[in-house]
Length: 359
Image (tube, rainbow, N blue to C red; front, side):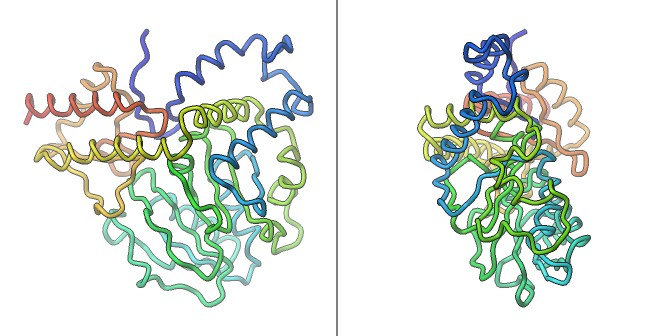
């Protein structure tokens, strides 16, 4: 079977070059006579891989020296809990800007740990915009301000980072590595891997060193960022295969020109897809144009009764995983780094043909 164009929101597409390397490496990795899945995480070979992976990540994101790179398990969902447990004492306030389902979930986790404050809420317009920062109801002396850089379900993305007198913490699961970012403007960043980093099973956190000491006592060892920072993310057996794939993805990104080159492609991909949607009376995107996501493009058909036919025919055409999230319906094209531009072109051509036949 030939490969399809995969628009999955996660686990998502991986670069074909990376998949081919994995295929070749599986029986015998680096002449060890073993798969990377079989080798000890304490071996010289794997320790070297981990060091290279961090070096390449620091290069790609220009991570300052006073930040720690941490690899954990549990996905971004666990980080939603680790953020308040590490950064806030029980009586501390923490501000949350909720622009979609994942921001709302992060707020719910924080409410179990501290005085989490809903500083702004975009649910009044069904998560199709970002409230103006001047309207946010911020706490006095908050421990941090949390945002979700890109809401995967709603397709809403911050393109400008707000000014803040307290550390900004961001869930960047769907944004990380899609473009350059100024890490120094954040107190902490976290991201599930299964969008632009690698396969599900490993999670990235980048934390400013002065924020590593937890603000409360008796945290479980694996709930403390400090534990991972002090052990080079090997406080327990890490997800070695996922880490290995992440290393290959980072090498691939460097080889194709880094995040500046990736940003140019990603902006072009999303721009042409939004242009096709906006030019049609058959399709629509409800998100305010000022905060449309580069990575996740939801769209609806003018006649919802055609949704099933659209999904069936697009799958037959090799365009897969276009069904919108169950909470919102419609369609969604997730066009992460590894989704090639020709996949977006093929989707646009299919959409135009479908409209000609059913519009």
